[in-house]
Length: 179
Image (cartoon, rainbow, N blue to C red; front, side, top):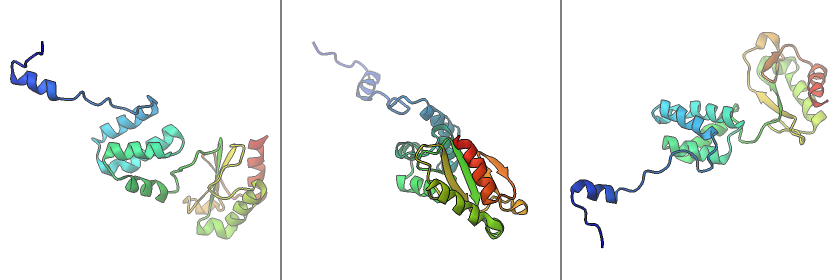
């Protein structure tokens, strides 16, 4: 025998689908961090960069699945999220190495030898800027300007700025990581 709704509330409850489960289907807790960040900002689209920073911090890089999750969360087109993620060089779409080496290629650093430092690193490790060594030990990046022109050429090794670098000094530092 079928149950007949006896009030309007019964009818509404019967038609309302179950609320979608929040979070990423994978159950990865790092997506919860993104949810909290987006919720704190009330899912405003203007917090996109902040959310991408949080995503990169949590995941190490911005893979396609993460970009899609952020786009849906902030109700933005994926093309806009991808555009922002690829515009700023601090965001990476590829997994990084255990160590990072960022060579400043700003005018002062370049004139004082930053380009030679970068070329020496590329040649020695056989990778280009933006790549990671095949063993995953080091990612080589460049920055347009670190704002450290007084200590040019500057190189950032794992987040620590090293002043007045030469090709030899930079190679010595990075070779130390590889041992």
